[in-house]
Image (cartoon, rainbow, N blue to C red; front, side, top):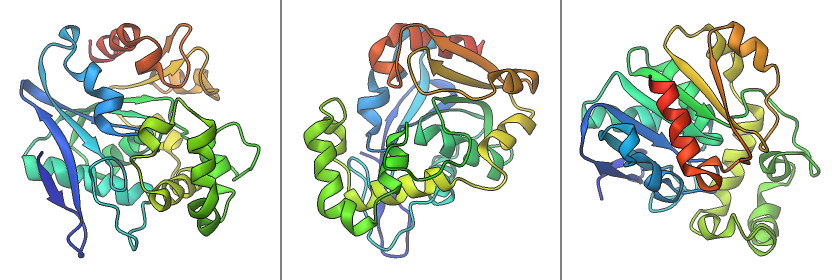
Amino acid sequence: MPRLRFDEEGSEVFWSDLPGRFPARVFIHGIGGIGWAAFGHIAGHPSLGGHRSIIVDLPGHGLSDRPTRWGYSLDDHAAVIAGICRHLEVDAIDLIGHSLGGDIAVVVAERNPGLVARLVVAEANLDPLPPSPTGDRFSQRIAAQKEADFVAAGYRQILETVPLWSPTLRLCDARAVHRSAVALVAHVQPTGREILETMTIPRTFIRGELGEELRDAAGLEAAGVGVVTVPQAGHLMMDDDPDAFVGALVTAFA
């Protein structure tokens, strides 16, 4: 698999690169996920037109290295994605991110003018959230724990009690997952929502009808963001109804 060094310690990020026509499409998975599990069955779908597809394993996830002294902030992750694109000499890309990957995608587009031509975020946070042991989102519950406690016990608890998540989560580093969750709920300034609303590139928010709540969808639409709902799908729309999710992408890229 292709790889690229992303820190001073020589840690490497890995990705899959499917050949095809341009513009290239870059896919970013969510927290505790891996690229191929999230998007391997999506990127090559015939309805998407055979574009070159770059499917990343974020640092600390999947095959990518998991340095202990790295920050795993949204800006850290975004810099890695931008670095991959520079390394591959691709620009004017279609950038697709799910959950944590959606928030990273927004930051990538804002911090790197010209890199992203069309942006799709699926079930992203968009707003800062308080850490909470009873929060609606797993990122809130993870961020409410101290890093040492999550590494020692919280990570294992999720593996044992959330069977739908455990196949990919067990391939991720507990410390990386915790720091990514802390960064996700703390978010960036300006917020992902503010960035998304003020961009001028085509951008779409995809949500599952049964997934996480999207606050102020009308405000996004008024700012020119397309909002597409996948019926009867939860947070993991790509698994619940892959064809419908692909249809939402087709709508976004039309």
